[in-house]
Image (tube, rainbow, N blue to C red; front, side):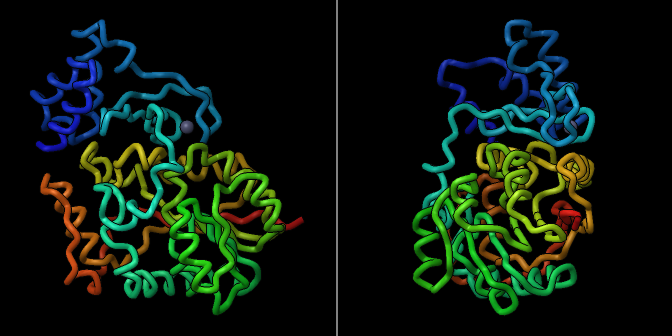
Length: 335
Ligand SMILES: [Zn+2]
């Protein structure tokens, strides 16, 4: 309910109408077919709102097809659409500025869709990341490793036992935290200028980062240019095609636009990788040890309570697998 309320208040900026209809048929938007039905209903009954609720055509950044993007639902003031060809989801936002969004607030519970207490959960996260490093070493045992969106450097600290590590982070506070702990981390976006300064690498990781990027295909394409032949890109992100995502629809835990802008499925990830000339080495849905503080934070948000920082649970973690998040290893062919 509070989500509905939030949408109404956002839309009070001069827009009214379709959301009221959505409220009256709320149970249906939990499944995507329902959402489609709502879109159709809206289009028929509210011609005036047609431009907002209609399906749209785009050249899909994942599958590269000129594709119909089906309108699914509206969340946090953003239209959520899905490519009919490959299943890639996209959030259409207006005026979202990542640079002003990813500040220290994002990592300290000040933003309802950010992290509850990122630094307080360092122990749990590092245990989790140590497992990720072990996983990566099945594909590449050493070399230069770049972490794109490295946050406070917890992954890099685990990885540096085996790799020569560097990181890129947009949030200045987090990047500075990394540098103070002795890591080689650059502040900024993964653009041509910054990557040019870093040189080529053997392993590039994007851990829960690709869904935040304004243009993920362009970024991955750039990264491929800075990857040595035979090198790998490791990506973790939600799986929009998963049962859990499909059943929970607009209420899916990872359906958090405007910070999540893209919702990959396995098919859309494969399509993008192949179109960039990458080999798909591995896809799975790993178990994860999640800090209890993050679980309670997300549960509180979903149940409409105001998320608060919960100090006692920051050190505790729980193994979780909803099979709605995937881990992908892509390899640049060696010539
Ligand atoms: Zn597509």
